Length: 365
Image 1 (tube, rainbow, N blue to C red):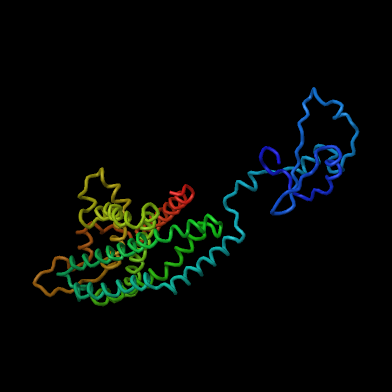
Image 2: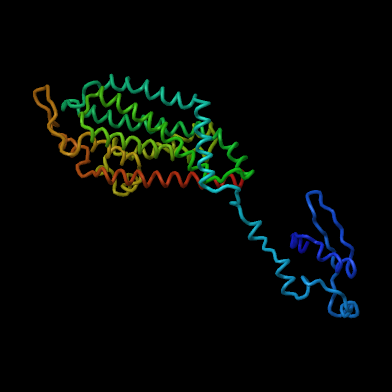
């Protein structure tokens, strides 16, 4: 031992004759394995000259200071200062955690079944509420309401699923991560990937039912674009829900969660358009993921040169969908830009949630 740290941990037999003959006796005491404790007296420069000048047999290992220093060299920062030491690789951790997550979901299907059932129950209700209005020019604002409600429904269900479920798992994750079972990064990515099929199934089920019942254009590329936007907004909402769940427990998350959603909802462009807002508040529209989701969904339904809509009345002002896009200030909206913006916001939310979770675990908050 030197300065309270272990500086040597090897076979002590080569040193035994030297230390036993000239220094203090060796004391062997270790319940975990062979360890030799050496108590070496200090020799000041002006004392014990005779003792230091005596001819004593020296082990070859101790022949020169450089060899001794090399044998006894120990860098505690290299071995003791590392937090990410695991017995398996990251890929192995990820694959096992992903398999374990799927196994848990297969055994405890309550949350997964509830999420799927909610989407299956709400979809026919929305379909009956907006039944057959997809190609009616006189009902174009109701059709726009259907688009907005679909985004809101998928956003809130994805957000709530994380704020309610994840805080219950956090104590288990903290204990297993503290015991070095796996890295937090491997668990986080495995959890993200494992939820993709569930959210995909729920979203596609809702879209197919409501899209058909509301009578939207039977064009494959429009169905694909609308489904993609709805999936993106659901994943972004999950990231925001994970961030809230990392900050609060279940009770506080249910209370403060809507406060995190409201700013994005207010500046989504549905209640007030960007051109009607004060220029000082324009930046709030640009960081709202619901604004990009609404623009992308509106472009999927009404954009890309959609032909004239049916009119069963004497006069329909918005027979041309392009005219309606101009009315709602989305004539210059870009679907690709909306997807990229949602992807960036998704990444920001996920990374922020990861570092908040990591901070809480390290500081045991």
